[in-house]
Image (cartoon, rainbow, N blue to C red; front, side):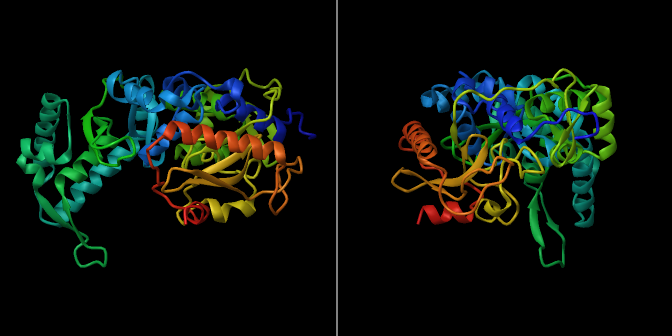
Length: 405
């Protein structure tokens, strides 16, 4: 490209995605822990996303639910907690210290200050009272093991204290201390999401004490987080890194320097890979298809997405807030969307035309018979392990809603 840096084109980026995100058949893995380790973070805002993302990457998805339950709630080798951009993710438990120090501390300070300020404006008890109630609630949670907010409030009645939020504003509301406090404790790394009250698709859950972890220096934690993410998602631009982490650009640049990241040339400009990842990565060796859930970490992995998601497909596949819905993939690019109907059938629709080889696709239906057969096989694979479970994405998109009519 004239700058002396190695050029990594669309084909190679898609090959890296196929292998490192465990989507090509030969790259699939045996356990949820292996999936989470490969991707670092699975979006957890919608509980079903975690299981669907794991199932898409297991060599044998039949045990997706039992194995993911084991990892989350029995072995605690995976943990659901707040992370980047104040979002709930599922991480390998050994990553909690890195996530907490690299992305959680700054958000946590703001959250606690906001809660104290909101309570003061409403004439509610002060920060000293809140700290006392917090310590009592954490002690109760230690006794109980896991508990819902209501169960905690029975143990510590002061958690039921209410205060008016934004009095006189159109969005005025009454907040309960337990709800706001648990949110603060979550971003502070003191509590994590526990077992749901219902099935694995339920959004009602218990709380548990967070696993004990070391307190790392922020700069060290940011370097470790960035190294792990670039290993999974590199090459990526500085803008991608800033968007994914939620950091300031100065933090991104400092971490890139600290890990010795190597610059490469991408179609959208300069990108970065970890130091020993400059060599070419071959194609996965066979065509592949995947049905990924809404908010899947692959679909949401980069800010600049043209190399795997044509702009004209986005209106049908994203909701009004920018959350991606269920997507159909063929050889490293999004080609359509899918949904599950009330009778359990997994249905899908192709939105993209043939790939032009430059990261763009033509309009209209059609990706070829081979693609359609592979996608149909993946739909049958998904439908089989879902069984009698019905999954409705929390963030509905135009294509998904249309498919289930």
